[in-house]
Image (tube, rainbow, N blue to C red; front, side, top):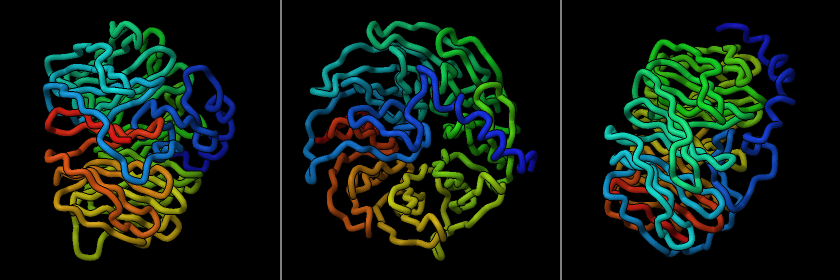
Length: 379
């Protein structure tokens, strides 16, 4: 553990920097748009919460056939849905009716779990050949590309004119959002699969080297590192000064970022499976899916289970919350709507193909991709 006691001072020092800038997304305590979901998990804290109201009984409004399996979670900005496919295409669709606007071919290797991020007229996405693409949202043409040395499954994040992207070459990169020029890179000891959560100018992410790190966005200085004790692929959710995330040691952790200590660890008493899903947070509950086929809701203060809901397949999809309901996909081929308060099964739609992507919720609509190659929109 390095420089743990410096974290609070450093965070305060960069707070003004982290809260300003044309490329930044809303910070966790700022009002958020009800019409956009511009990046993976909705905003920089990755809390998976939408302020957009969703109908009590969402109906299927449209589908779009991408032609290949979809593991990339959608982004929604200014009435347009952006999503990547294993065919290697980044696709832009009208949210209103699913009609295509353009299709950009990124790579023959395909686009895997990397999900688009949209800011200032550009959509960013990584591909499985290791290239990050910046694409003009109006023309669907590349503005620039940046090549890493291995595949990209992490999703890009935009902060103050800097694009953050993790790569399986064991680095987190900070690039100029305008030009793709490398500003800095931070080396880890293994793959960077997770998407960073950013709070007050610090990017926090777990790694496949079992370390959880904090990196200053402005200059790439690593100021925080704590052992999670396990391989970590899931992205964290940052609420206040606590990071919540799951690991491949079958645990969910609450990490105090001020003190650099694990506040609590949760493991189901009988079902011991990894957590690949990233948590959502609302009203004191941490909600995430497990490869044990369960949705788990945990008390954020104590780590105690508040409720579980069992599906028929493992859950790699990360939950999204709108109002008093949690929406999450399962590999059993269904999209579920559960009561946030107690996990009551209130709604579902049988897609019939594994849903490992995370729902995006904006403008009263839920958008999710499936392994049958279709994009589904409900509202």
